[in-house]
Amino acid sequence: MVAYRSVLGAAMAAGWILACALAAAEEKPQTPRVIAPAAPGGMVVMQGGAQPYVPMAPPVGGYYMLQMEQVQKEVELVPEQVEKLKALAKQYQDEMRRQWEGFGSLPLEQRTAKAQEIQANAAKRAEFYQKQIEEILLPHQLEAIKEINLRTRSQGLLASPFVMDQLGVSAEQKEKLNQFRQDMQEKMWQLQKENFKKAFDLLTPEQREKLQKMTEPGYRFQAVKPGGEAGGK
Image (cartoon, rainbow, N blue to C red; front, top):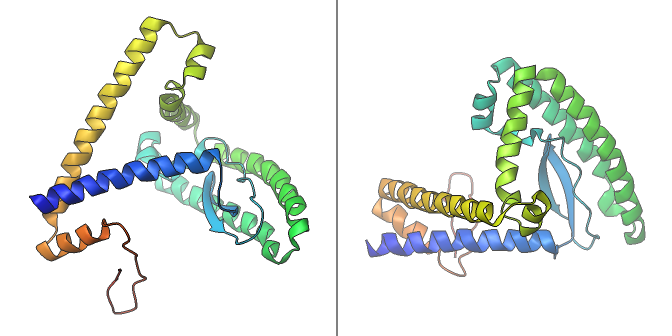
């Protein structure tokens, strides 16, 4: 039980620290990065050494969520549509990757101009792929993805004092919105605890011990060797 509580606490703390780190990184990027899309709207961060920070290529509308299985079910995609979207995602990914080829070998003073050129072209290509996606989806599916985007994005927007002021939200509405958020956070916290306990109970004592070590400060993960086990220290 002590080990369970220790790992649970460490896991939740790690999640909170990660969320804070991501928020801080969005406000002020500390590490130079090159961003290349992994799928329509999905992005993969590639570390680029000494090169200047390169802005993220524009996502394709709000369609990046179509990569998620639960969204595909809610939108009622059929297998044929899923395969078409996967092929389109790969095409988009390959096209964007080709544009970044040779970027790292450019003189430092030329990289910013090259990045701006790529970004300008990426915006045009994003519009092209957005139209391609909309041709694959049926009218009711387009409406469904719009509703999903509204639902998911509004959660964050309605927590912003600036947005609430722009919407003219009354004091009574703010109080109710804050209560909604608190209720959701409590439910998510409880669900996280329940799911973690189920996962932790599923592990063997040896696996629990290894997991607990992985949550300790200073632990470093090592790659898994063929035929071997993952290690860390």
